[in-house]
Image (tube, rainbow, N blue to C red; front, side, top):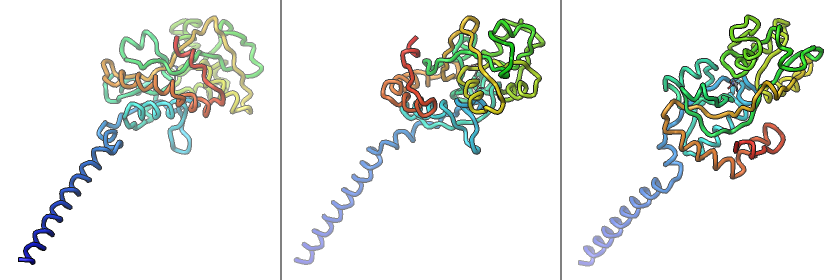
Length: 272
Ligand code: ARG
């Protein structure tokens, strides 16, 4: 009789133990925050990593302001990202064909692109700028008339130069990426490059031996805003806009901005 009592007590305890163990493991998986994130899919982000300081290759890695920005925003929105350097023209093909989720490449939001793509809210203010050799006689965009100008194909830089030189002007030399356009300038095949101000300013500053300088022209070159680009109708836009708002307001954006540009951002410029 006594034996039986001991036996049943052991049985009851082991039963309780198993029950509680089940409970813990279930709770464990439910309460782990990363589990929720893991369930969300990894987004394919495509870029043209030849546009320092926004996106460029460094020791085999894609780095830059945009990279840190998209990582912060995606994390806030609960997604993982996989960034691939596909090149500028292919990036647009991929987003149009919905084979990628996000285009991230210092992409200017404009009406023409909005017909084919969706954009996030603006995250960076930019304008085109002229890059010339230090001794150049070019002082403004109007001085580009009659000169050979190198641009990256399919950029707003190409568009603003064509506004001045004419749409099919043979004097506009178009390159697959901006580094090739700058190389053409250094090789003497062009008198100027036109691209985003932050990019040409950083290039002139970081490559003093190339002896280049930048020229701004607010009369000819309008303000532009960068956005993340989505396939038309993408469900990500709402999530990402919410996350961008958060990242702008909670100091994350300012931290990333300061890391890359050594100064504080003027967030008012983005609320245009
Ligand atoms: N902001 C310009 C545009 O959207 C140039 C962007 C080029 N970006 C790049 N990663 N190559 O047309």
